[in-house]
Image (cartoon, rainbow, N blue to C red; front, side):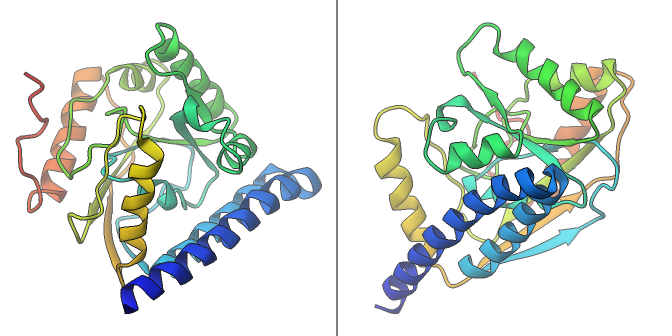
Length: 253
């Protein structure tokens, strides 16, 4: 009974808070400029943590200069940890661009939208990442290209590492580890996604506390794509070693 009541309170609070963020960020961009809009968004993420009982332990130092931030992606909650010291844009599936509120907020934060299953998607993504970096922004993205639904690490796509090496962009790894295996989530975004996702979200709202450990690496500059991918796997294999169920990366055969 208590868990259900807590979920109702959090659901209502989340709707109100998220609506306020979606209105406040674009207005702040318009009146005070985009940098202040990012600050409002960062404040909104911290308030979301308080509302949902998310307790984050950062292990390492957040980057203070523009970088490619590569993270594992076990859950959609991962988007709430884009709270670094600098403005950082996210990479998200284009399906969300036309959603009310979510799409509006994403556009105001200069989100890079990716059209999945498109031959030009990878090329366009890499171009946009370089453009954002050259304007002084960090990029917060998952080189695995999808939520994993677990703490296991899937093979990464090399394209982002190619651009990091080619353009000498520093790379920082974030390794996200949740205190409960009930939190990781995966869906292929096909039919049935919304009811499936909202059932998962409801179960999260009923949890009194969501513990998250985020290990942050130093900034890397790689001499080769292979070196970067290898270090990505090693970093996550170490931090997630107690919760992994398969080798890193997971075999796709």
